Image (cartoon, rainbow, N blue to C red; front, side, top):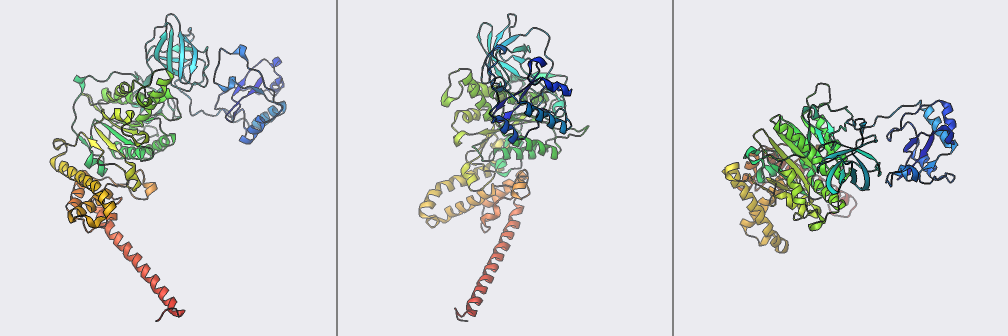
Length: 622
């Protein structure tokens, strides 16, 4: 047995290779009769070392460098275990084995990232071999009888986990260029691959509910294999025009500014636009809380290129709310698919299709009205740009891929209402540098039925959700769809905000005194409505300390109407900040008045004490 220790970025000891005892300077290890299983990258039983101990080994002067074993390699690889190999001294080997024995050999550590759908490699001849690797792009040399199509999948042989790649284009006779759905860390030229005779297929159906999956449909939640009778390919044609059904139903979400200004359509596509840190994820979580948890049907959440922390928090919230039930016999209502920002570009480019395919199954086969949440669809576009560059394609405007509109259209056109059911999609869309004219968000605009724009200027005022009422739009804002009363109030609110913005320059230069009484009323009422647009969220209770609120549409319309009619002209602005419906205005106003009286009383008592002290010291007359 030869112990090979490797290092890269502070990580040590990633391979344990078996050699003939005669050829190994450490052959005496076998005298201990310790049988080691095949080494697993996540198995910590072999090396129980602290970071300081690992660092000490790395810095030892008498470690002998071994030349690269060129004769054993099929070609160049980025995997560090083939680039740097060092032998451990006997003393350190003894130390490691002693540590293992002292810990009573804890056994293999469960790998939370193991791919349960990894099947044994077939005994047949390989269908292709790897000939080149460039990031997530891999070139394959096909055997003569393999006639694959674009989007067909290949799986690498001889690996512990699944490494699947998808054909992107033909480079020549028998040569295809592929995009991998995993890091190419362990790949090297010469590896054999198996043709899966079709696109990537993922499990669909009720078995996926309550499970956390990756882009391949493999489980990532340590709850065992997903047993399904059917798998669907992630690349599917959009429903035909004769299958589509127009929808004009309003979806009430309980958030005042959205329900009033840009109401959502049931079975439509909704976009949450915003730059970095303005609250897109918080808003989409609140929408899930208000809509999905009271929905009763099935939901699918696709985490595309966002933070793993947010995905974990969302998973825990779904469990706490009972949407995901882990107990035996539990009935979960939500399936989760993740390909977060630490994943390769190929994963981030395809994970949205995986989630969408599962939502389509619920719509087409189970005749369900499905909610499909995506956070963040911009990362899908961004990953496509990365892959396009690696494929050698000429970029288009602002460096985006030349196939930008086609890629977005392939996803958005599949989200629709059909005769069997509907998919209502809520998509968070990152806006680079707060520029809505950027090609990625601008191209997405044309596919959406409602757009909710989150403004940094409004967030700087401390108003959350920081929805811009003048930028947000909805196709449902028509008298025929929402009713004449709702439509009239919405238009009056927008006119008030527009007038207030027009008067802001005059106020900044000349002050409020130069305005007419009518304009002053508009400004004061607009400021109160701006504060009234804020609302405490259920998912943010732990941060704000305020109970979340779900405001009925009728209360929202009546509240804004009363403010514009002057019913609350004598109420302070702060009484409208971070409240739910109009029933909370009077209570908060009374609370503010009591607080103001208390502060005034405290100030009076302080001044009285100061006066008495001054009199006692003879500074001031009695």
